[in-house]
Image (cartoon, rainbow over all chains, first blue to last red; front, side, top):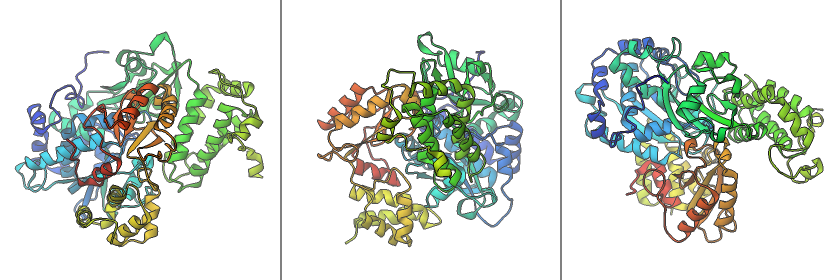
Length: 448
Length: 187
């Protein structure tokens, strides 16, 4: 990979950069001073011109999101930071908050000023105990030094940040479920429209951005839209943190320009697949993004190219499976996850994830049938785009993509009556039923 | 006589005052109940409902939605093993089985000595550290079956091993106090 200067991970290696003194020493809070002296409309224009797109998975243009906030209304405007990182394979926001908490706070303060918000909330998943500690300490330091609170950074702008913890629910990473949770309700998605920009938190106009997105904002303010858009590709500008895990020699977070080929990210940054094995399947952006194969390794990792290859960039969470790994087992584990995390509000998602789990379980553990493959395809079709939120769509990704690229592997599972990838006693259908792994898709019976 | 002490009731008010709508403090207040009683009890939910002017049904609906609220007594040390794909590839299934076995009888609920609860959890956002295990939400990295056995033995001896980052975990109820948002006073 060509020489590249990291942007949002630049301070990760610096001892003490997570404290306010360390942060100030390394350029911290200068962008905030600039921003507070800038007209909010100009800030929005700058972020628009930078081409920054949301890093939480959907890739919506950030500046446009900010611009949707009605100007001059009576209702308070809120900024909510989505720090509920839970997409399997994703761990960038946690490290951003643990290592450089002030970068996030500075981004929040700038965002708040841009959209006319007085109080911002960080909604962080409860399991991030250390990240929360770092953020809470940083908030206290920032108030103490006058970068937050009344008259932030010596101006007449007031900015408060409130830290709020979730309590264990992946769905709360979905922005409207997050809002419901922050309002003290079950985290269930809302019907849109109205969109949060019009009716969000407490029915007020609300901007919801991912941690990585907001952490980028100070750099854009400091170095300009033109500089930022010179990084990455034309439509996917800037840099992205790729989270490498699974079968790679050096799992970890790697920041690279958007459009860096998957092969470079996997082989050069993460050290490739160990023991000379080859890549069998990989996700570009977490469990909700369709599997790709070794034939797609030259795909540039940006929103457009990954979509053209038949998947989605998602959160940039690259999970690698090698030739010895069972795709059916991986699909089963992801599907169990969705079945557990489906909030239950929409029938296609609630029921579909449950059925898929049962089918995959018997395919993997014995008792699978060839027509299970058709049933899985159909259940997926009946889940796609039929729910309030995208959780159900995400659940279909590992199903349809694994059937597309690894159909033979499913057929082999049916043929041997279980997983052919490991030495495991082959279970008969009757034994499987006894063990409670089937009894399932007698789907025909149920549908009758 | 309520569930929350006078001090915690005052803290509950403080938490509620952080939000323009008091109901937003519901999750924090349920953590307070967990801090006081070890898990979210019926009386606790009733009291939270009163404090926030909600019905008990509304509070129960929320409490039962989130996995970090324990509806039954939990061990002093909650051992959470991620078994999602990145951790599974690194052997998390064996880690979980070993944790369940070593923690002792009843570990999937609470062990008879009250020390442990072992649970299988979804992605903890630490896939670079797979397989990852948390003890009261403090992470331990690249934990193999022997390592989880040692971790459990150490806790049983009253020693708390250093997590991968940040201070050592405190007991489950004390952790709930931190989660409520009352500040992380660990050294």
